[in-house]
Image (cartoon, rainbow, N blue to C red; front, top):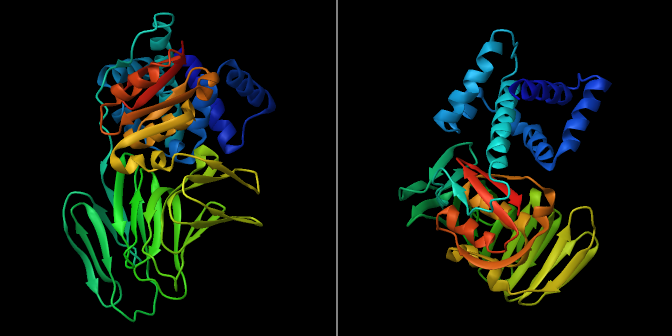
Length: 387
C-alpha cells in the first residue's frame, strides 16, 4: 500500500510541475476516478500552500504512533528517493496518512458507531494579527495595551480583547491597516468612526485608521458582522468578492469564502443597498442577497437574520443548510480539515443550534442525529461517511 501511495505522490508531483507524460496523466485520472476520497486528497495536495509545507510540519501534526508506523514503511526507500522538493515529500506523507485513515475507517464500516475521537480539538479563541501600513505585524489576543499613538495613525489600542481606533480631527491621509483572523480565531474592532465589526475565523478586513473623503470605504474577505455608525454625509461602503454594499447606519452580516461559491449580505436592521454587476437592490430587514460564483445576478430571499449573526454570540445556527457548508464553518472555527468518503454526504440538509465553544465531538454528535452520516476524528482531521 505504501509503495502505491509513493507512486501516486510521484504522479501528482509530476502533474503539478508539468512534466507528467500522457500515460502518467491517464494513470492519475484513473486513480482519481476510483473514489471521492482520492479526489479530495488530490485537491488538498494541489493547493499551493499544502505542497509548500515542510516535511517536519507534517510529521508534527500526526500522532507519534502513526508517524512511527509511516516512518518504518518508507525508511527502506528513503536512500533511493531524490526528494529535491519538500512539497513532494509532504505529498508522500499526506498520501500515506490518507491511506492509513482509509484503512482505519474500513474497519468501522457497517457498525454505525458514534463519533470516534482520538484527540481533543479545542474550539477557536480570541486572536488576530494586525498588519500596520509600515509593514509591522502585531499579534493580538491576550494582552491589552496601546499599539500605536502618534499624529499619523492616531491611537490604536487593545482593550478587553478588542481593538479600538481613535483618530485626530483633520487627518488628511488614509493609512491602511489589515486585521487578519486566522482559522481557529475571532476578534472585533471599533473603527475610527465608531463602527463596530465582528470578524469570524479565516477573515481579513482592510480599512483606514481614519476615514478621509466622502465615503467610509473598507474591503472584506471572509465573514463579518457590522454595526455601522450612522453618518448621512458619509456613506459606509464594503467591497467583497464582486459585491458592493452601501449603508448609512445599520447592522448586517456579510460572508464570502472561496469554498462556499457565493457571497451573501444579510440585513438585521436598517437598510442597505447591494450592488453586483449591473443590478442594484435595497434590502429590508430579514432579507438576504446571494451572489453565486459564475453568475452576474442577485438572488433575494427571506431569512431569519438573527441566525446569521448567531456566531457573534457563541452559537452555530443553521436553517436547512447543506452539510458541506456547515462543516466548512466548523472547520474554520476548530481549525481542522474535513474529508468526505462519499461526495453525496455534502448535500445532506441540516437544521440545528450548536454551541461554538463546545468540544468538537458534541458538535458532530448533533450532526449525526440526522441518522445519515457518521464521523471519525483523528488529530486535526474529520472523516465523514454516509451511513
